[in-house]
Image 1 (tube, rainbow, N blue to C red):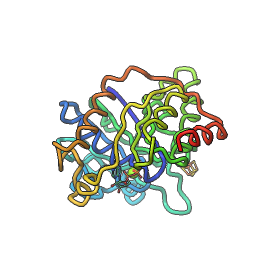
Image 2: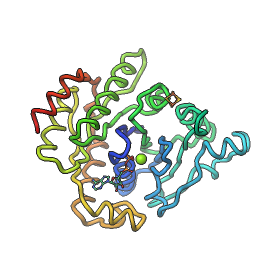
Image 3: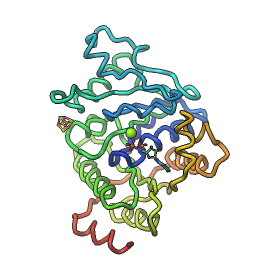
Length: 270
Ligand code: ADP
Ligand code: SF4
Ligand code: MG
């Protein structure tokens, strides 16, 4: 079983990329489980015909974990993909990270952390112990950074590299960087910049995904691009990403950049 996590800045396109990746993987006859680990709870929406499924945290809060069953939290979406949303903490008091780990423990208890591929879709603005849970506890073993060429998004990706580097140094840790996914904003020389960033952090750019309006068209139709426009070039990019992830053996321990170096890198490609 392959357990991969997509990390990146909020709004960068993690959920769009995750859902399309899962859809593309499912068409390779792989059994896929996608787990949304972002309090935004919309990771799996496009796989569920636009539906926000109940979150594990909400159910556990209301009923207590002893009264939550497998069918309450795992929903079957597009092409048989199993979908779970961890959900968020109670505003002002809870810890999202605890919710994420409680979700994994519950799924483990049900024997539901299985299949060919698990895709964890994780918020990466805050790389605290909480949001590092999927990689810290040995669940996510291949980390993919989703970034554009914008400095703030590279900054978040670089921070995630710091977390992966730290966790990878632990004895028995299997956590490695799988690569960088460039989800472009359309700025000049963006592909070159993200590719160079990936090289400098001791990794590679596994896929360039252009900005394309078909993503919005699919979204308003409550579908992934793979479902809505399977013959579009954009669907081809997501299929290519799926192929590269399935075949990827280039897992590395990242070498994060100093902030000054990151900024001068971004300046080089202005
Ligand atoms: P995140 O999960 O990182 O917070 P989302 O996947 O929700 O981000 O994406 C934020 C918005 O960006 C979405 O409304 C989506 O339509 C748009 N988007 C993401 N990737 C692309 C792309 N390659 N082309 C066009 N729009 C995109
Ligand atoms: Fe939030 Fe992270 Fe702190 Fe938990 S550990 S409360 S998720 S910042
Ligand atoms: Mg998201």
